[in-house]
Length: 125
Image 1 (tube, rainbow, N blue to C red):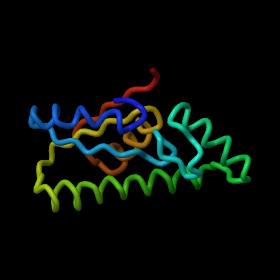
Image 2: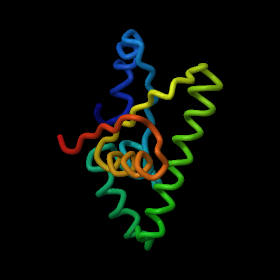
Image 3: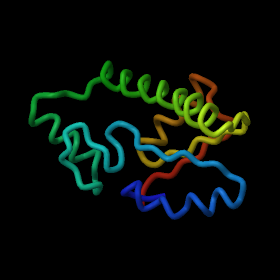
Image 4: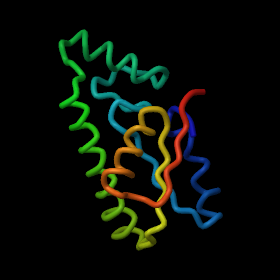
C-alpha cells in the first residue's frame, strides 16, 4: 500500500479475484487527504501539522481523541452502509490494515471497539 491512496486502486481487482473484499480510505491527517488542502502526499502529516500551527490550530489530546473517535464512527459506517447494505458482505472476518498514523488509529479501534479479527500495520518506507 502506498501514497497516494489512488496508487493502490490496481490492487483491488487482484484482491477481489482472491475473494478478499477491500475498502480503502484515508484517515484524518493521513495520505493525500488534508484538512487544509495543502499537502501533496509526501510527508503529509508533518506538513499538515506545520500548516495547522501556522494558522494557530493546535493538535492536542482532546483533538486527537476526536480524530480517533470520528474515524471509529467512519469504520462502523463503512461496514454498515457500504459493505453490508450496498454489497451484502456480512462476514465477521474483518482485518484492519493501517499505514503510519493509520496503524495507531486502527490499533485503537481494534482494541477499544473490538472491531475486526486481525490487525496489520506498516510504518516507514
